[in-house]
Image 1 (tube, rainbow, N blue to C red):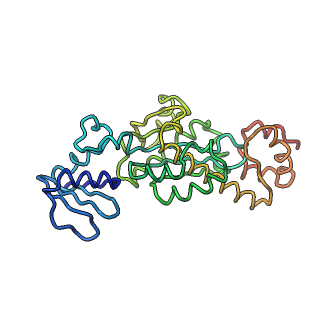
Image 2 (cartoon, one colour; image 1 turned 30 degrees about the horizontal axis):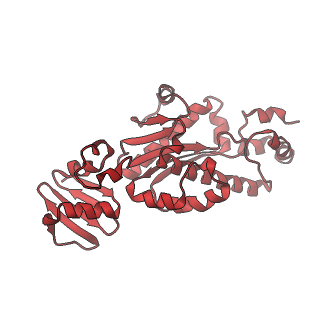
Image 3 (cartoon, rainbow, N blue to C red; image 1 turned 135 degrees about the vertical axis):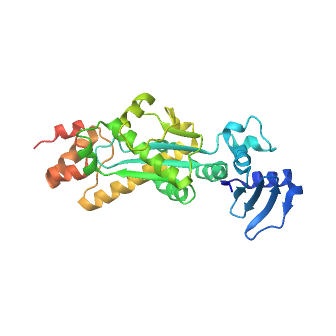
Length: 293
């Protein structure tokens, strides 16, 4: 028996019931209703999860995919435009201190009100205080995959791989993990583009498993809520990692890599030496060459 589970918002659930009211049967426990159609049983649970079971389960569930919205069977199907979607972004690549964090996130129409209430937007447009407040609420509600590459490992890997190669492998792994959580990725899965598509897949040519069918767009965090969510969660992880490193070394590590960081970097080196830099900084940055040894 084919089974497909989706999470819908309440208006979609109500519209679905009104469309097939005549097919309603006895309601199971913890459900709003159950519909028995020819070839498919649809159960809408109190949690807003809707389960399609039977020979035509995939066909019925596919009505909620963006690719079929041009012929919506439900009155409010247009509300699903652009959902579900997944998106990934990275944080920390421009900072001398701290790890590289990549997050792939998934959102669908049921998350729209949450994202609106939290004011979801690109993490670069939010203050650190806003990120620390928003991210935990987001992480409690949406599926995501977060990868954190610490500095020691980063410095080792960067000896043989450039930054774009490292990012490509992290994004691919984040999407693999997210796919495992979801069962399958939505048709619309986006990466905030940092390298051309051909180069991205070239970096992955020796990987055991590769996620394909990705959409690559620049400034995607301003176009796709899923990318914005990934950006926020990645930034949150970066901020937490910086706090942990600062506490470990009893030294307030600066963000960024500009001129304002030169003096703190020198002070950090004098206190913690080469090993400290290996564990807390990205050694290939030009900032390392400016240290007075």
